[in-house]
Image (tube, rainbow, N blue to C red; front, top):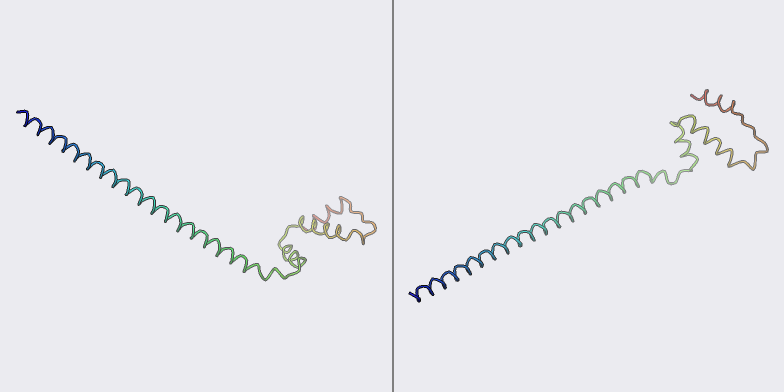
Length: 124
């Protein structure tokens, strides 16, 4: 009877060890699966980053190529081109800027508020 009980206990211990081993294998498989998912996610993020960088480079090149002809133009010509669609207030402010830049050549200049108001009305 004792021999049988000992065999039963040994069998139970072996069964418990086998169950533990299987549970350990399942845990390891889950961890390996999670590692694989994270590695795949890392590759995805890397690919997305490269794509965004390539798109930004392409956009940068497009903008730079479209602005390249304007680089050699005189700034005053660019300013005139911009003024074609500008509102009157901007045009008057640019005129004032030109006057200020040439202030050393101008002896005396009087601009009354009425004159500015008239200019604003006529240009509307």
